[in-house]
Length: 260
Ligand code: NAD
Image 1 (cartoon, rainbow, N blue to C red):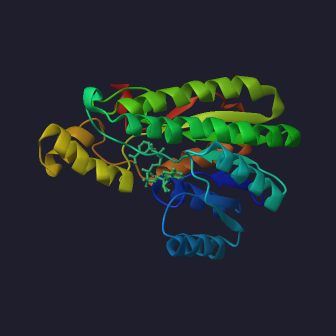
Image 2 (tube, helix red, strand yellow):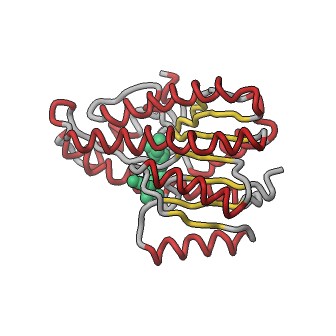
Image 3 (cartoon, rainbow, N blue to C red):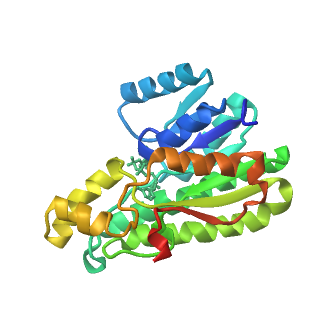
């Protein structure tokens, strides 16, 4: 079982990452939380998760734009817990603008956080996992790893890129008890999506209600947001022993969005 294993979840102070960390903690996994936020709020989140599930929860403040800090986070997990079984690359940001107006600094930021950070974290984690002969890497991509939407050039490019990274890592570690897969969520109502509703309304010149109805849930045949619990279900399968033959794949949890 997962009891006593150790997981890092990047970007787990909020939204999907927090829910994925919490779901693993509920299975007895010790957790390294990471992400931005106000220190008192983060400490409350950390202490609550540890208390609720009776596991150890650490917080590491690595900025996902900084390779040195990412490597330090992985080292800290190994140093503190003596092992690292699961790496979930989840941190992500969004910016919505037409490509010919897309700010250069936003492009660089999104590529760094949504794509390069997963490379740097995996690079640091794989030697530890190889030594253990066991490991699970799960990259939180998106339906936008498989299909595009207008005004999201950097995000779509990064998410397509992370599927390529996922496949490459999977091939390299396949004989060492390590798997690498991606989960491709459809729309989940998190702070990231709530912010987009406002941005999309501005970019398209329509109301926020129209964005929800005609843009966001228009793409999702179920007409319902995906829940964080449903994503946790997919994650728990991938990190379990039963997930051993799932490798290099993109698992859509998108209400049928990419079936179209
Ligand atoms: P969110 O904004 O709620 O959470 C993002 C997390 O990343 C936060 O903890 C934040 O602090 C952290 N983060 C941002 N910049 C960081 C940095 N420089 N260093 C460290 N941490 C940083 O967003 P979310 O919706 O929970 O998104 C989580 C992941 O799921 C992202 O990769 C996102 O692209 C992906 N995703 C989300 C949806 C959705 O509909 N919400 C759909 C598909 C994929």
